[in-house]
Length: 224
Image (cartoon, rainbow, N blue to C red; front, side, top):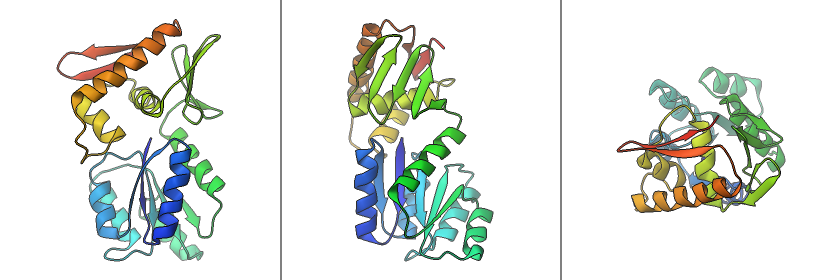
């Protein structure tokens, strides 16, 4: 899961980035509204944490622009203000959730998990399920039946992406954007390597889930 943080308090943004990375999220952080909007419109993010009080463009304006472009990326608004009017303005502009500063990082993590569930992923105790496999993105553990294997972070992120897009073919371009970022110089063979790693681990688990290649298009998860 890739998260964008738009927060002008650099120390807070850096702290949130480290906390989220420790919880196995991929994170990008920017420090003003215009940069936040540019990044958000790339449509590579699964969730956006957006401060309201920002230089260059305020968070409400960023949010309105995101929604005007037809993007449905979940957005959690952050603000130092706790007034009801700010909360109402944010929610009316298309925010999915609202968190007033100061806040506990555990609450932010819980709200991120809640928004993930709203996207339609099957999550039980922070576990994603598909077919006979269960993936815990927090512990990086993948299991099928009585067997279990530990994944590396990029393997877990790739499998999470494929599960979230289980009814669609996922191109290598989408995988690179989601896992490494739209401005990454990662090449297609990096994707092929991680797909190969995952296939071997699914085989080790004796899982009926397969990562099938759609020639010239990408990959699709089958076996549900």
